[in-house]
Amino acid sequence: MNPRSLGILRQSAVDARFAPLFRRLGLGDGELSAFKKLLVEKETVALEVLAVSEAQPDGPLSPEGLQAGIDGAAGRVEAAIRDSLGGERYAVYRDYERTL
Image (cartoon, rainbow, N blue to C red; front, top):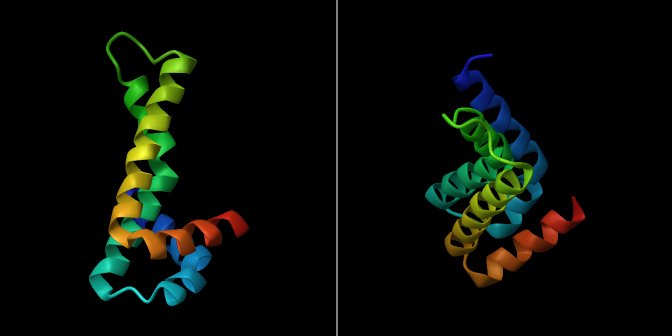
């Protein structure tokens, strides 16, 4: 599967899972697009860190190093989501996510 097709598939999965939340948040078009991109990024962060690890010249990271990389990248994405939504809408998002 080419990267574009994979991106469309991931976006469709996010749309299906989070559609009720999108309606509740009442985001504008630009905000919604940015939020969807962050959700896709959040779901793929572990795979991206693993791919980077595998491509390292000294070999892949240790399990601890890999987990630290995933945690750091996931934390940055989560902070970007919080910043993009603001406090009140972020709380709605977190509640929704906990119910999934």
